[in-house]
Length: 322
Image (cartoon, rainbow, N blue to C red; front, side, top):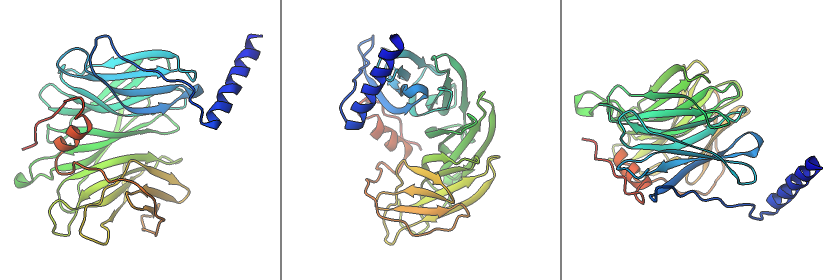
């Protein structure tokens, strides 16, 4: 009888979902009575929903906050992450593997290393499995923006990482992509600095069925106009070897921003842009795409501007990079 009732309930949920009828709403608010901000969500095994964001925690600095709900909206588990410096910890991205394990990425203040990537893995029941951090060569500002997991539970995290002042021979912000095994072992790290050796910000990451990793975002343009950017897409092999890089600068002298959508399929990787979708064959030759709608990202000049935009309502502002 119980099995029949569960089957009936699942069938009702499916019908309501197909009709667009709201199924459930769940809110999280402490304790303590402070601010909570969700920034990422993913659906896991059995249609469980995982949500990640930040909690002020009642103290001066926020922590990662990850919550799991059943398909019926019942809270299953809640977990926090507080980094080693007990400073600000900001979850920005989330992925779930086939086993229901959740992987949360973001940036976290380190002990003497400013912001580092911080990636935390949880089991399907919410138990912490591993934590790994990445501090780039500039020992300064490393901000994870996107995460993806492949069919073998390998985890790929990308974001922007400070390499050093341009005047001192550095390349400002670079794409920095890190691969981990399902057990949290670092497999490879690769960085991309555009031809301008300027500010390069990745926005999205995807992996195909054979383990090829695609990272896209926007990169300082070589057109001579200050603060102009190009789309820049980089492909890596399963071993982290760069396969190809493709850039698109548009027809006018304007900013080119990439949204958070990158879909590999068949022989092409599709990058969704503010005004169009562009297809890149896996060999790296650009082809014509079709128009789509979208909005460009803002806050492009410095990482602090981007972070301030994201967390403005939470009043978490970071100092300007010198």
